[in-house]
Image 1 (cartoon, rainbow, N blue to C red):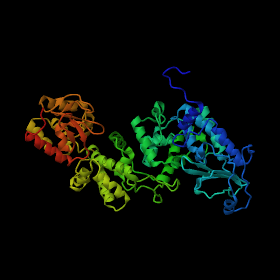
Image 2: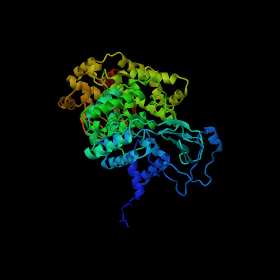
Image 3: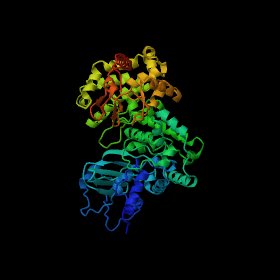
Length: 626
């Protein structure tokens, strides 16, 4: 009996399913029907395919004569009335590995795989090597059926299976053609059939890989190979690391099943960066794509992975497959991608950057086509940012693009490719809205009827967007400088402020930033201004001495110095700020009772305009006061 307060331990079959699901996550689906005997069940199906296993007392084979046409078979074949079938185990999901065990082999060899999961994958590969599913002499096909009948059929040329899954409302089709055979018997014509040709993953290669990992341990991690893969494909560095670790993302991780502390340490990235990379990978790699990408990137001799440059060669092969399947996307600078992660937009950082780097996805292969939802994995490519489906997708794109427009303008330096792409992104947004199609019909209500709809539409159409994008397009800002630095965008105003208040240039610069910018955190100010902490401290002390700012500690501010007067708190992702500046910069804040920012998205003007207006208010004695 369990002690009071101690949760009962799950039964062994549940523990096995959970452990196996973690070992194969993102590559193979592991439903609840995967039990500890699944390996034996797969071997059982393999023997049935080979024709070497006798049927049990409760099984009945469907005999089909050679030379009969599919039409004749479908006309004469009837399911066994007693329902005695050789059913595909584990809801048939293990068939996803056929022809593509390379991804599992890579995961087994990766140092970023938990030891207990590595052992389960090695056991799986060892089992797989002993089945006809690893034999290149066989031919396999998978697909789906329209009907709701489960069946199995076998003759001298091969075997076929239909497995109806009522809960999923689908019927899985699987067939195997024996060496020398031409076609497996099939009493029903399948749909969306895909050939699973064998390339990497012969029995010899699989057993060699298993032997090497158990003798030598996992391969050494190669951060330079990760960087090379990122640069060759446009993936972010953490996403490239996940791919090279055989863990290329999925949307179905639960709890700590994604990465533990050891795995993150091996990959060398922060938790937030890896979470964003997971979402990035899931956006691009869908369903079959994860296994397809890594199916044939392993070396002919697995021992090459342990040789000098082995992982770098693996990265080169992976980059070539990626370019063929998904194209090479433009990549943002590493610091820009990190800044996009910190923005916490509603889409992955890489996708947000791509909205500005290449809104039309011109980098995609010319023969690629949009993904479809019929269940067929070919042809495929990632969705473009504007190929959203449904209201939720339109809402996500609308929110992300408007958050990104303000961020790219104010928080990225001149010359940054994401910032330079902002005018084109705004133009493309207008182009999409102007179309008479379903996507415009979904996107338009998110601009008009959403919480910030009217403000967004006004911002796009009243000239504000044009003035802001013109600031970027004209290239007036010196390369590497930030619009958030008044010295770069309004140097004459900084001179006026310094002269009127008797301040140094640094103090006048900081004062203007505190008056206008929504998030003038210490870290941001030092980045925008290229200041050291000591220089920043000196400028702030000058403002405190003159009574222009106060020193304090406030939640989520990221700074110690504030304008005098009331303070408005805010819940993420909105920034807290001085109540005085809220109407100036387009934020909405409650000013009675509990001061709180409840809406903020777009600046109502260019930063030079806002810096100038803030200084006008101060000179007219309308500035912030205690």
